Image 1 (cartoon, one colour):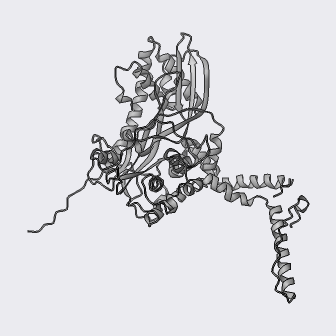
Image 2 (image 1 turned 120 degrees about the vertical axis):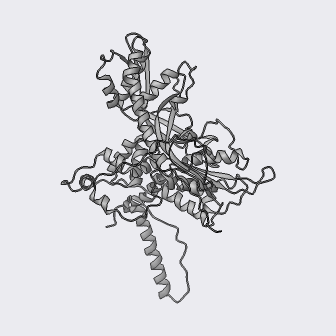
Image 3 (image 1 turned 90 degrees about the horizontal axis):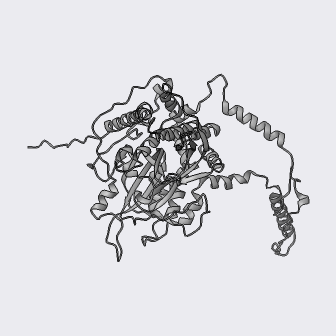
Length: 155
Length: 381
């Protein structure tokens, strides 16, 4: 999970926004971009294209890896006029989502735009994802069993 | 066996498919099912299609279920066929089920365990009475929430291992075998067995798992832990050089705890069978764990006597796409084969009748000639 990333990792910030964009669907990203300046012109270096990732598990949870099955993934790589190269790998088959994520990945590497994008796009998407997770965690917590000790009243 | 090209039937096939499409749509006065409806409201069907189709994509799973009219083996078949059209970009890092965003987690071996017993959205404890209120439709009240801080939920197997009561998994980063790349071969190691079980037919594995409980290779199982929820998938694209999260998957994991009497080198301890399945598929995860443990019999020095312990038997028959292919191929024209069978049978009967008419007790002579020439094709009505 994103919260556990160490702060001294130079890639931590980028990994965080890539993780957020991977989980945000196209409509949510577009909604966050609506009020800001238009996306920069970009050159597609690769894709967007859909393919597969083979998901692995471990025997017993901690043992040797095995192939569990595949998932659909869409990837895209773009370059901005300023030279920044952005990449995206997102679960599912939405090519527009992958392209938007790649453009944002490149744009967020531009220090002139990063603070605004962090605030207008990444932070609200992350908050929405955290809220969804908290809601499901809260529902799970409500189904936690509270055991009561049954005492025989004998005196 | 002779093969004969036969033409014809194109119009019948086209018309059959047109009728299939109409039947699939059903009464046009009723609204068409949308994929989001299927994904949201028939989630267990979509999960099963994804697990046995070995492709995680809830939207495609919903489409497959719709296209197959709810026939889940057909839906899995559609997903298997679709995946062959896509390139593989990468493999993931092994998912970490200890870090799961847990929605359900129960243990049948410890009542009080860190993180507690979390029932989640379960059918357990329902009365299995048909709910006519559901038939009528209508709004569903929101489920209660508790905003207590979540405790860490260590795996039960890790708790037992800390006490030295549980076998340890040898830490390994060996490249696992892959059934989508190399066909099944024997002896099959545990990595390949687990892959085959994860995409194996739920009904077949359920029956085999049940057979181990009924004494066919019993190994005294306890449901050490079952957990279900979202896990993060990470890949390490070479162009980046570091790992990134690409999304989440719902998986169900089962750790079955089994007795083991020990050996010359290993003290008596618990062993495990492991189940891990795409989606919320508790029955399948439990059955998989039972069968995984049964197939470890030889490794653990146990007698291999029961079907579930026979690795070849299990793996050659667990894949429902292969099974349905071979069973259903019997529908294809076997006109020539059958013609030769029919001729043999007629000849044998003629011999028997001749022998009956004759006084001498002559048996059937060895007629090994089985004519299956092309000229006989299609002569059956």
